Length: 476
Ligand code: ADP
Ligand code: MG
Image 1 (cartoon, rainbow, N blue to C red):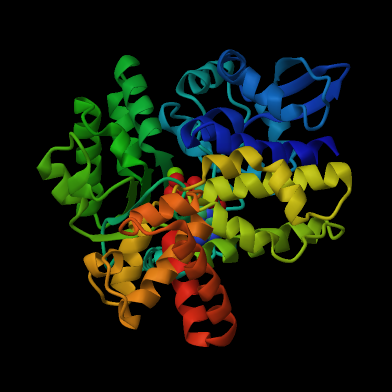
Image 2: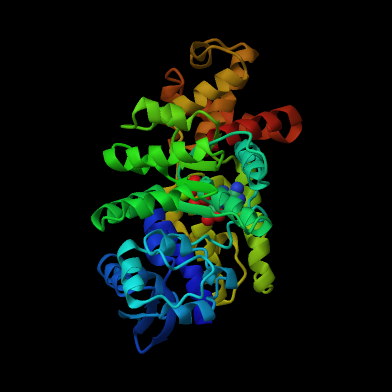
């Protein structure tokens, strides 16, 4: 019970701390016990424990109250590395598998990839200082990645790279806003390559980790090790490259590594939060190099993709918890209302699951609204009257001035009524206010318009379709 819930709570935490924090600090934690208000957690090192205590204790405690409302303190212990590997965590056995050894290798020559890992205390403390590199999330696979219009190109490119073989585009540069699946795709590539070509040295790390190691290497005077290690990589993936922009010596070193690998025909995959030439503080000679392969972006999600993702998450959750019931309309509601990013969407769903299993009830629309009121409020996008007027005018190909103006011919009056209807349904504006914004019309005119459209929706399939289309476009 405790372990399953902790796995889920972690996902909730993931939504509240940022991705770097999550991967570096929260993901490696294990919940050992929760007794008499004290949660005992295992951290991979004392340093991680102390850091987490200092920075995330409150967040974690808050999350843990879902398991035990009386929890008030966290004690951290250090799990010996060997023990951790023998005892897979709840996530999956793969979570404890040796993805992490690139970091161990980096600055600890002598610990080879395949050697039994009983590192000396010196090696351990070195790792402690260097941080564990981000392990690959076992859930981030191609199988669990839902493909839709906004991400199909990125997905296809990632698939192609994951096949290995002759490199057609190098580097592959993936970019897009927060939570759109960049990290997921990169991990999926790494999983696939590791499975199909285990001999390849596939290195995945965030740009932040790249910098961290580089700085450590400088400090420990082990630049030669650093360079030679990175030069032996077959596939290098660097996530969130924007992080090193403007960090002069790190970005220089990254550039050298990059060039050396490309020269040897090694595949490179990079992600960023915007297109290479838009990354601030990145010298043009570097950004143009980054753009020299294939650059693909992940577009913001649309309604269909969000719904697809929700359905797939529910399906996989129900494999383990067949008792979970989700009422009709709940997923559609969430896909409509939470359009910020997939991480928020997932966090919302995780919270719903946790809540539903605690109270042992079906997830209804009402429960959803109760349980997620803060998330829903935060992602409420304020649709404005102007936006509606503009969209509707565009849709019917009339001028905005005609929509608002006094002309009463049907070709203007009908779109005007449709816009009024949408203003009433999608904004919190009052009828008189809407009337004012439609060229100073009376509130009874608006009321009449809204009523007329409600009637027409029942009779005229074309109008019903138009409305659905407009509503989606406005809510996207
Ligand atoms: P980014 O790196 O672009 O900020 P992530 O890859 O971390 O985003 O994605 C955020 C969360 O959303 C992850 O948990 C990921 O699994 C999930 N996610 C994003 N896109 C998809 C998708 N198309 N299908 C399934 N899950 C997705
Ligand atoms: Mg990411």
